[in-house]
Image 1 (cartoon, rainbow, N blue to C red):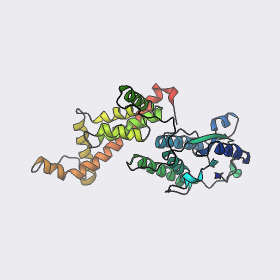
Image 2 (spheres, rainbow, N blue to C red):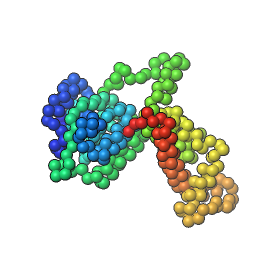
Image 3 (tube, one colour):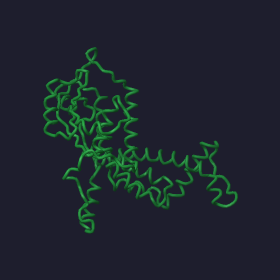
Image 4 (cartoon, rainbow, N blue to C red):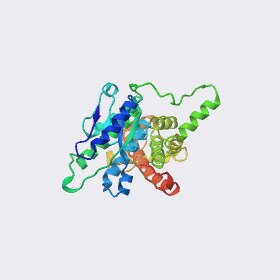
Length: 316
């Protein structure tokens, strides 16, 4: 099935390369690629909002599926019907464009891009049902839920056999096989945005009270989200022994402030275990707030540092 947006921004002749690609790769999802940078160089007016939205969507699909698609929002597409109809979907509006690509990527389908013409209209010529605020919030919602689904340990339905080029551990008893797997994990997600996100993810996991499991969880989450494993592991070390008491104090203090309106450590009454049980809710609430706040701050700091130290590695 071939789809095309009804806003006049696609040329009918661009259907031909889409259909040719669909016939050459019948098991793949074909998505049009509007080269906005090339269009700007030719003097075409491309709204900055469109470019930012494209870059953000590209980043999140790369995190969710590991596939780097230059334009995930183009409505000029060709879908292989059998796999697309074999799964259920949560959404049916603009956010379906994102969800279907993620689910097809999870199912093992290749998403291929085909260059198409980039057309934009201004003023009264522009026709669109896109609502900037509500539809942007819908996009945030769908990406958040897809990331959470990707992190969940539930099995995902496979729609196609894995590609022959996919990595396999091979002879697991040999050190070389494990070294290759480790090096591959470190290379994955090495753009500035992905490194910063992996570091912030590690910080968040490291600040949770899942003691003795933080490093393993950071590795697991980084692999599930196709992020850099080493950056996530480094971030998870934020709760190393010298700093652990500080985060414990802050977590309980913040939680106590939110629940009881005062920043103070309660006096220990009875045994230590009974006090820990009584303080569990202030601690858990405060820990969630502290972990989220510090992770967001780490994300901003990491992006700033990487922008200066690795200016040639910018990514959406």
